Length: 355
Image 1 (cartoon, rainbow, N blue to C red):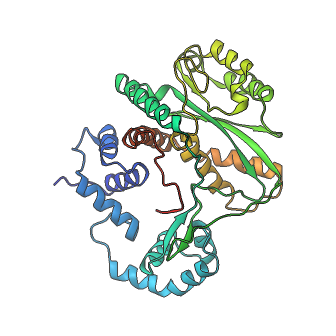
Image 2: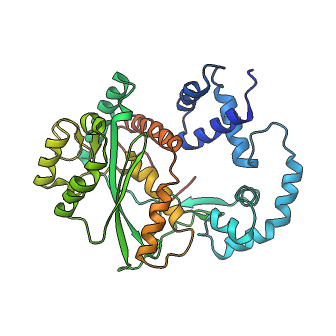
Image 3: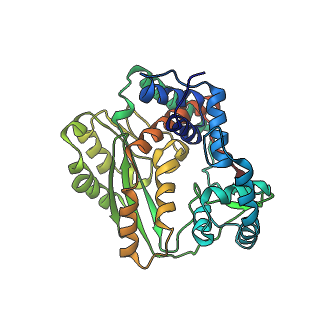
């Protein structure tokens, strides 16, 4: 067995946590470390991942007894906090108790607590299954034909950010010994800002803010005056622009503009050659990664006002690294494969689920 460094083990464990695919981890390893050694086998990757999740390290010689003893000393504090406020995030609990994130997780696991997350999924209609399946098959074919295809896609989306910290379904967890079928209530009219951004394998475009609700007029103005000028000439000429089927995106002026600027290179509702399947946030990097990551950063602290909210959103975007973007697009590839496996169905559970 090859002698893998601590850095290589940690990278593989972290990639597996994100991608949930041995094959994708091995591909990623070969692209970065392959010149010096062979990719680790599945047993090694799962072992390192398990070690990282359970004891916070990928080292072989971990003093487990000392770690267990340390966790036992703080067990009462951790159990008391999550008994009173089971919706507390590990990040907030770590800050409040002044205990490391990994120690809190170990203490909860020892007492057989599990994290549950509420999921909000679009109900699929009968014809959605075939549309999603067809798109996934076509997209995987395009990826197989060109190793640079993924580098050319720019995924875009908009999301609401509320002053009160609207639920983030990707990063929100409810800690309990049993599945509580947790439901979150939110205020009906909370002050908010609408944020639009786009993501490629190399960088982030935006954020661009809407103070009012998005409509076809202000959406087109943002594309023409903010987004398109931010592209390099190469990106304007070669890149593929993706948008979902929201009503403002579907207007004739918007589609005409896209046909002019991204001729045969835009993906979405009404696209002649790259139609985007309806009700598919589970395969959009903006939905399955970007918004969840940003909200987990923005809402760590209290928000004072809309100006403060915009500032924190802008700062959070700066924390997205190129390595993270690369991993996200590998995960997009993996999700397409899962859509094919599930014959067009959702690739996430339809109810609150333990993770």
